[in-house]
Image 1 (cartoon, rainbow, N blue to C red):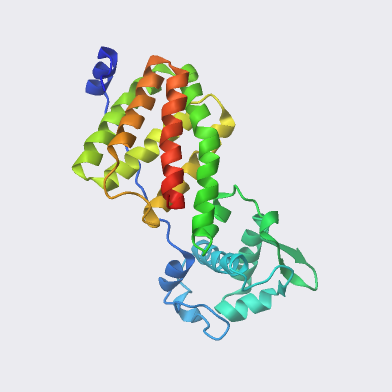
Image 2 (cartoon, rainbow, N blue to C red):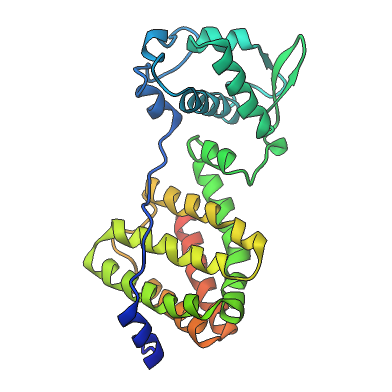
Length: 282
């Protein structure tokens, strides 16, 4: 694909600043860091002495995820209750950490708290589905594939339109940056530098969402981060990017640079459609 002379000028002056792609760590792995057993059950309590010097925020987040996954996978059934004392005894934690855990679950609507009853597990339909915490919990459960499919369907509904709007609304600095990012994506993809490729891919898609002129689309950038990271974790990223997908990223970038919304929409639709197929195993 050929880019305009303006694009070449932009590429000679600009270098994309990639963001680190951090693998999300499941709660069970974070709990291991506290010297906890792999399977956390009432019959295998966590030694309190191993927790005293750890951040209560990290700890309650890990325990909240463990309990959330219990609900998702049916071990803690909808409508069943658990008290703070139950949580304290199961994980050998303080009352304060147990309360923080409960508040974390409650904020995501995973539970409701009733006096003299305790924490009551809620149906998944009541949870805040677009909450990044909830998405992470689901991706660390046996529902990970279904969650990735659902999130990819959301991307398919949003990102082609966002790309078209970016072609019309993005500031000239962002429009000039896109061909540079596409060029770097190709270079790293063809060289097999997949860690750098993943970071650039995150940057590419987030730039489009943030500069689509729609604040709601911009707020979805964190979800795209989670989806792309989740694909890496689940081994759904190819070891080498497909040539057609590299071309499609270049088409999106060129369309945004040239202010061509229909070309941007079609090329982005091709990208996310391919992602959807690979996620479903098609």
